Image 1 (cartoon, rainbow, N blue to C red):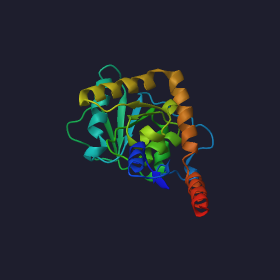
Image 2 (tube, rainbow, N blue to C red):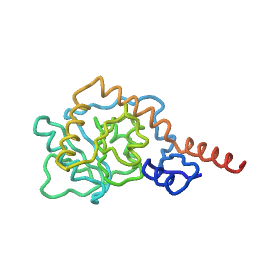
Image 3 (cartoon, rainbow, N blue to C red):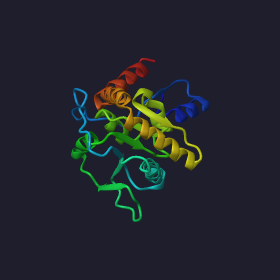
Image 4 (cartoon, rainbow, N blue to C red):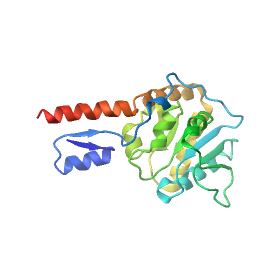
Length: 216
């Protein structure tokens, strides 16, 4: 039995001769952090796009900033960035710095859409954290996000030429921010997905696998 955190790894395991491969995200939520009912988001005066992570090249922060800048030419949307220190010369970004873990649910609840631009990531704990708080997701169609995040909770963008990718991210953000009916549907789907991503659910999954394998 091989456990894979994304479709690409699962395909490689099959090519290398694995007889059985199961997909499993490599991160999970503490059950107490997932609301028992769909959260009601505080809709800010300005539409808020939230990005969370480190400012290292593979996280794709430059793509997020470029997509937000493109969107800001015709809207007053705000890009809020949690984690990195401010980057000199950037415009249209609210730099939040490091946010304590216990304050993250409130931060997710203050946003309209979660933007995830990582270019290489098994899954990304912030994706399922945002989903658990009912936040629609716009992300690159890669790796764990592509494999696990439901299409009805997200808009996934194919990675191509940088300018085309930025443009597609901007269009996706616009859709989420302007179509209230779709936003509500995506929020509910994201929250349902988050409900399934707890540590307790992971433990049950793993225990079932151990039971099955030990009986072989």
